[in-house]
Image (cartoon, rainbow, N blue to C red; front, side, top):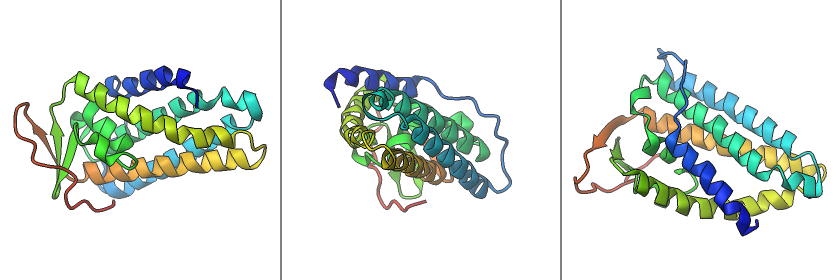
Length: 206
């Protein structure tokens, strides 16, 4: 992917840290099961949307790469907000938690500066916006590298949309699993200046 699109990607990523979607999802009596349903629906929605945007072949398809990423992230953002709400933890969903849920499955080492997992607890670090932005810059480089494969797939007239839609579906489901695992645990806010207790120790998949 051309380096010229990196500023667009970074801007899109920074928007993730500054806008937390509102959720009308009520507290659920069985939040884990309800959250799985939310994740399934979001995965199907993201997959169908990406496949549709990938239908134009060749150069026309390349113009949809950034819109595709942004729309998938928006679907994933809303999914994370809805999962937090069904667990009754909307008040604990801040920019650090959103970045962690969206990118932990693909960049665990990069999100340790904002959120850590210690045993059965989730430790949310009181990171400044600058720290969050620096984390997103590192994530942006990784996202750019991964997007190269999706860009090449847009040159395949039939198989391309299927591959791209499948990738968005699986990626969204992975974000959903992280969100379920996160909001089903005890969440602690670590005040600024407190030594880092370490992160991602003893993690288990959702």
